[in-house]
Amino acid sequence: MNDITTAAKSAGRKAQGNLPETEKWVEKLARFGYASKGVIYILIGVLAAMAAFGAGGQTSGTQGIFQKILSQPFGKILLGIVAVGFVGYAVWRLVAAIKDAEHKGNDTKGILFRIGYVASGVIYGYFAFQAFKMIFGAGGGSGSGGGDGQQMFVSKLLEQPAGQWLVGIVAVAAFAKGIYQIYKGWTNKFGNDVRDGGVKREIKDLYMKLGKAGFIARGVVFAIVGFFFFKAAITASSSQAGGTDKVFSFLSSTGGPWLMGLIAIGLAGYGVFQLVKARYKPFNTN
Image 1 (cartoon, one colour):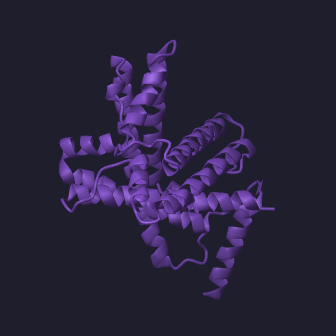
Image 2: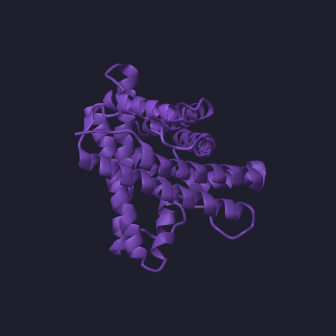
């Protein structure tokens, strides 16, 4: 057994050594960011599952969860911790894109991945900005899930030259992201995201199952968001767009509360996997 454990750790170190070097402070920010992301997804999933099965809760996206956190005792401190985590995650995604820290390469596929990292960094930077605005009382509103933010974004795009085409491009990107997430979950492609040589087999099996359900559920959400944006592009109406809260409403109305509940539980599972990733993701630090 010791030989197996040693071999696993050696393989982990070898895989880690194949990664480009990352500054230690970037690694710390990244791990904090993955943990913050995990907490938010767990809250989104658990509250939506409770709503689906009639146990209270609410359907909301990231900004709705921010409001929920802010309303708790020491809410500003808690939301501030999450906001800093999101800043860390945004920085990590930008570093990963610029320095190719995830080893995606410079071919067409690699460039597309790295562009996706930039987009992810910008989005989570925006979430952090919104969280800080709420903390300092400069905005945030009382919306439950950020649907108004999605519609405002589409409205701004539609005001631009070829605005419908721009919204259509966003729709295609979101839908493609969703399909890739489903593929990644179905084929267990996310397994390389963690270095787990020292983790017990039963624990690894559990978080792999949670990750599988999580990536598939997240893919479904992205695909439906893409569908909403496509409708907004076709009709030139920002009211057709929507975020996670609108996705939950769509799932409930088309497939019933059980479908909504299953996707919600999957998102919570994705959150748990992000916490595991925060602990075990391999980095090659200098």
